[in-house]
Length: 275
Image (cartoon, rainbow, N blue to C red):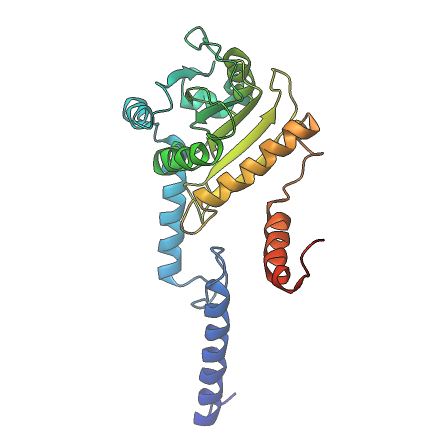
């Protein structure tokens, strides 16, 4: 076959420019790795290096431990009470990763007082201690601002080598009606510092995951903001108290409420006053 003509090369270049513009537009709306291009049969060198850097960040997020003393001082300064620190039965990070069951069981809860409060907070390192370091205090502040006028709040508990179900044991010791476990989510190649909130109403050891509600992907500015997460939590707490339980029967209606409120504000001036 002969060499491509100049017109053929120009057409191919134009098609490539159109394709690149198409992928650039899509990449503005997602953190997923899409439309990366290729060099021969492989990814471009830049993309390979960025992929390796993201993988290293995800590994570090899992293995670098939470600096508990520094984090506890930060939480104590918020005025919600001095936090108690507990750990699971997993002796170290290696055992925590190999034995999820041990991460769900407490080593010692003797330092926790029963406050009989409406809501308790458990700040858990989970699979990304980095997420708790980056976003834990900011998220807790937003939650406290949203909830403190309506409910009594127990002093926070910091949990290390923790899985979500450890919060049930802690909540039972605190004597709270609803527990919010703020936990570092499993890091990925797009996000390594995302937090999740697991809400359990009337918590006790043995609760199933179907009896919880989860708000995930909290990592501003690219993920859910602290304020938006707090508003969702407030709606779920109110719904759980009305329903008497959390989990699959409890739905997040915050967006519906927002839309309804917006529509009401729009049409209200056109309505005749009530007799």
